[in-house]
Length: 449
Image (cartoon, one colour):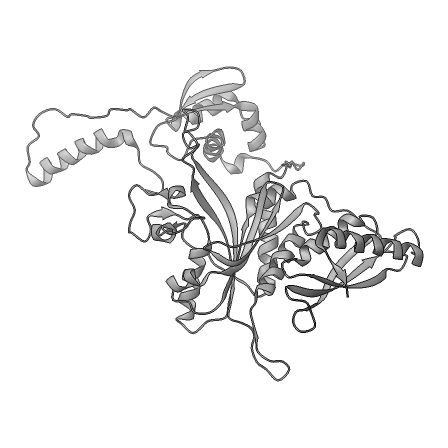
């Protein structure tokens, strides 16, 4: 079956079978053959360019010789010009569908030993396509995650409809349903990589492997009933996206003589998310928006987007989800929209930058803020206040508790300033820091401690 079957061989096969029955079993052939063949499969047609043929083979073979070889292979010439032969391929030659297949057959019959070794070397160059770039970046990130101790998993794209029955984020209406499912556990196409990873997790936990770092590149599928199918695009209601999923649970570092046992945390997952964005050249993109959210999938979730493009959701998986899988440990998950990341990185260019010749300057601010204020907001306001000389903003201490007003917390933030053309003077540094401080006071109600 791998080589294919000739659909027009049925008549010969049934006649041969009847003769064998007559010869061996003493049967009698009665009546005429009835051939029910509603849609006859036509012979494949191929255009063979003689110049291309000679170029690929590496030798000029006379046209009549080529026609003679084709005739011995039951390949008929329907029509011809000086440069092109229009061929009909017999249906039993299921391996000959393109002009290069015909050229291979001509070369095989002509004889490899009759082709002289040339004195010149020909080569062809091809441009990288979007698929090549996507695969290249996928390999890059895979190697990074593997180097950080992750294992790759590959799960079935078919999943269970019940996973989406109570979800408001991933609804049943958006499922791509199978017309003839093999089982109730494999009756829809997946909308998220989350559940496949959870199945991997519980499988390993049940076998005494509770400490896991996993990742998967896979496709997710969606149905949109608001769209209408057209004769030109019958699949307009269906879409397919490539996602990257990351799962973390268990112990990060086991107890040893040098350090205590360390559990995995959301901050560890955050670091891996930011490292992936950094590897793709998106970490310094000021258009990235970090927005916290909660839904039935995440207890404490964070969405990162750029404009209208959703890039990644990450956070702590809701315990109600884990309960369905009998997982009783805290669990962290991130899901990237890989197609959106590819679009975001399409115009990214790597630029050379000289090592700085002039020293950087560090300044710290201890800020009293409302509890709901995030460091991402502080970072964004700081960079918007000083776009030219502010190089880095780092949070190095957080305090909540005694000696602070109710509903407040303290952030200790470090700012690094640097001019690549000259040494910064104190007067200019103080002016920049005052501008950042005023912006934080105005937009976040921050107070200096």
